[in-house]
Amino acid sequence: MTSPIVVIASGTAPGPLRDFRSEGETDRRIFTEVYPLRRARGRRIAVIDCGDAAFDYGLSLSAANSVVICGGGRRSKGLPLLRDRAAEHPRLSYWPDAALRTIRRNGRGLELILARADGTQTVAADYLVAAVGRKPCLDFMSAGLRTKARDLIRNRRLDMIGDVKNGLFRQTAIGVGDGVRAAMDIFQAASK
Image (cartoon, rainbow, N blue to C red; front, side, top):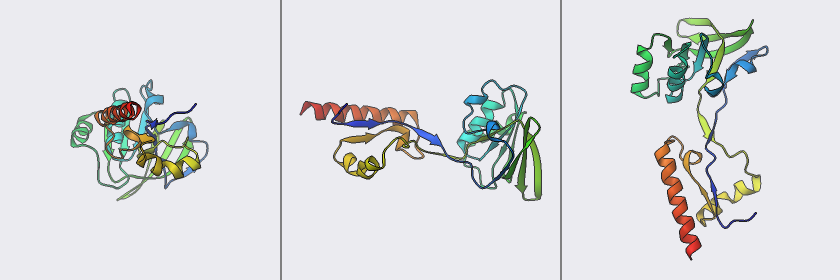
C-alpha cells in the first residue's frame, strides 16, 4: 500500500517504573493503567507518583478500594482540583514523602518498602499502579523511518497528531484540532 501522506496518531505509552528493587514474582500485580483493575473491589492499591494521572487513578480506584498514593518525595504536580478531591476522599491517602524502594511478593499480594523522611515504612498492597509518566508510542516505526521523519514532516509527507506529539498538552481538544488540521492539509495537497 502506498500513500502520498501518512498521519500517525498512535498516542502515548506508559513510562517505566524505575529506581526500585523487585524480589520474587511481582509482575502480575503491577500495572501502568487502571483498566485491568476496573473490577477490583475491597482491595488495597498503591499508586506511585504525584501527577494528574496518579490522582486520577487513585480517585477512580478508591470508589471501591482503599488507595494510597506514594508521591516519591517530589512536590505534587497534580491539579489542585484533583488533590482537593483526594484529600476529601475517605478511602484515599496521599503520602508525598514516600518513595518506592523495594517490591516483594507477600503471599497473594505485595509488600512495598517505602523510604520516608522519618525512615522506612512497609505497606501491604494487593496491587501497584505506576503512574510515572507517558512517552510517545512510536515503537512500531523502523529505524529508517525514524531517521527520515524530520524531513518527511518538513515536506508534509508525514504528520504526527494528538498525544504522540504534544508532550504535556495531552488533551482531547488539541488532538481533535491536530486531526482537523491534518485533514485540511491532506485535502489541500490532493487538490493540487
